[in-house]
Length: 311
Image (cartoon, rainbow, N blue to C red; front, side, top):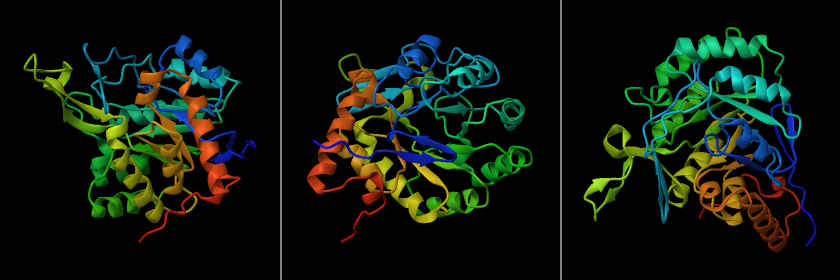
């Protein structure tokens, strides 16, 4: 099989393939990040969403595997943004995306101010969408609050930055978030974060399967693929052409990667399936994607990106 041209561009960075790790999956510690740097067919490394101060996250159990995906209530465990900012300035093997989050708008501004003042010139991603911090709402479901945060950010931030979004479920919400994002010079959106506040019941034990928030948690894996694809498609139809899209959610096969790109994704990140299968998943997904491209006569991702047909 002839090797395909899988290169893609995001902001000022060229990636040699479309696949990324989903933030939060095997990217928290130095050892995990070193593993990613050595992983073939992983085009870039996304760090754990970093907060102003280190966080232990929620109590265990906080992840539960399901036949059709997963549920988690991690609660943003991370080593604090200075650790990850130092890491992305040192990492040379692959391009990086520095994911950051805040428990308040002031936290976000403080973290981004330090990134602005640093030597890091790569891509930053502002996570506006964690559903698993008790007592903290997802900012990106409040369109007024999202606009206010971005207004403050772009008063001073001049480096490449995108945003990570929660899933939206109503067409008017796609219109509303796009109207906000189109007013700012963001590089990309990452869609979707886990589907917030699902509940899994262990019938044998008559109890929930994760501890925090009474068992409510974020859903991921195969079961959220239709939601993820809908968000990629709807946002691609509404966002400015210069805003790229990272499609996240539900990827278990190369065909799923193809579907994300067909809906308009520039890159695709993988989360739950990495936990289920290990880092070798990126080789398998790439092989399956290339085989499907060969079958369809495509040589480059641009040959089919965003070309989903309607009936």
